[in-house]
Amino acid sequence: MQYQGVLTKMQTEIGDPIQYYLVFESDFIHVNQLLDKKLRIEFVGYECLACKENKKIYRQGYCYDDFYNRPEVGDWVMRPELSKAHLGVEDRDLEFEKKVQLQPHIVYLANSSNVKVGVTRKSQVPTRWIDQGAHEAIEIVETPNRYLAGITEVALKEHVSDKTNWRNMLKNDVKDEDLIVFKNNLKNFIPDEVKEYFIENGKETELHFPVLQYPDKLKSLNLEKTPEYMGVLKGIKGQYLIFDDNTVFNVRNNEGYVVKLSIN
Image 1 (cartoon, rainbow, N blue to C red):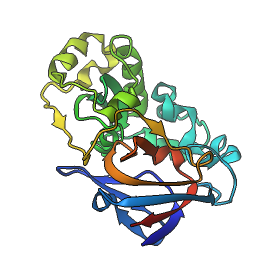
Image 2 (tube, one colour; image 1 turned 90 degrees about the vertical axis):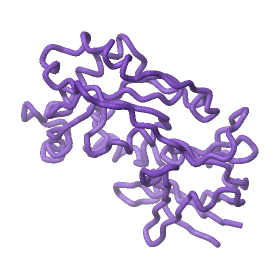
Image 3 (cartoon, one colour; image 1 turned 45 degrees about the vertical axis):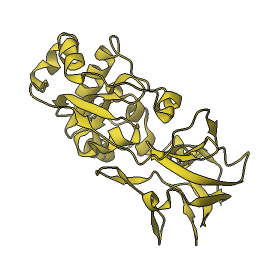
């Protein structure tokens, strides 16, 4: 069976375990059903997610020009504290920025390889946690806009990490933590203008991933260096496919790449 299309991040569905889907223009693949099957991935070319042209992908699925022009990849996306839509100030496209920034946002703790703080739109819970490969997570505050969530993250990352060690996450080199204790210990460090949004009552969310075998040593698949790869799929965690030979493939990091998938 063969499929061909442009990679975008895998769509997910909460379940025990998490359900994963690769969605192409006219097809979709339920990736969980491919566990223990042999997959061949062939690099075909590029298709920028914005202009749809066969132009080399620069970052996040976009060609160079679109990466520096599209509102979806403005600096405020990676650094929420730079959000200005609440002030009526445009970065690249004020209407788009208002739509995204002026909605409820969650500051959370997630445990993927270690406990980290992060920000996401409320509508992206628990998708964001799944994409990060977190096996447990908890909400800290719910703010009415992205800016307030951003300044909270900046304040809290002085006391807890804001990074995930993806290698440890994929090896499942993790331990359970009491996130309620972490959350309460951080309460005093929340900026004054955000304290009213603290979530007093809340419980941890536990997430289970479809992994049959975790890798011992990791080899990251680079489609430009290895345009054709074959391996037996042993797991899916975060946005990674895990293969039997310790190769891992980050689907999200390869958005905008056109691939051919063959399933045996």
